[in-house]
Length: 253
Image (cartoon, rainbow, N blue to C red; front, side, top):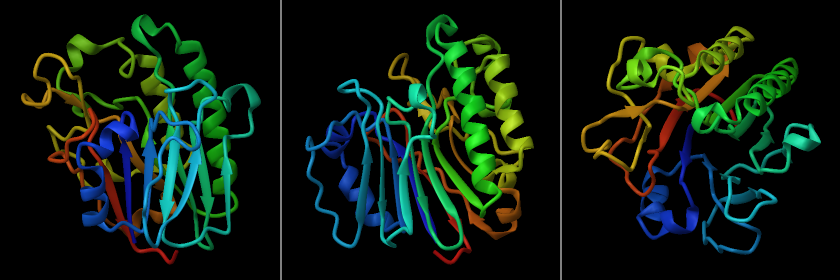
């Protein structure tokens, strides 16, 4: 089974930069998007053989997630069940016979950690949501989780220590999520790989110099880790400040 996750940083713009070429070529069973920046009816994608699910933020041009799936899910839900955290279109959950698939766009703590308190509340609620799902059947979580977990996960850890996405609080919170029973699939398969990033600033020729961060993830319930076959990072694919990532896993959908 092949799954793809991509923060497209505005789907309408990404469609003009080759999104559909990559979508068709990769031929995923499930394709998850974050930061679609769309309201209902603002785009019409012709994706034969795929069922489309969308979740928009109340604020226009902001956040938003989507899921395109070949296999019809048993059930699809939006949000994590916390009303004041569920107004930004951040989580879609699809239930399949053998697993849950969750796509997430985690709130950014923002410059100066201005939104860190909100982020910590989100992390705690999202962790509780995932662990509850995990009690029912295995979970695959993907998306832009807006944290570089370890120093190996960004080019310049020293100068970024304490910045949004690399604060001690966010990193510790991610550790708690893994300790709750989840595996970082890329790092499980590639424990010592360096220079493997999924996001680059548009400034300072960051992508050209590979001065990036790995903040996009596929996590799986620990009991699925031995079913992981591949965890590609499609760093050559442009169209966004993030690149797509993948998970190939032995699962019946």
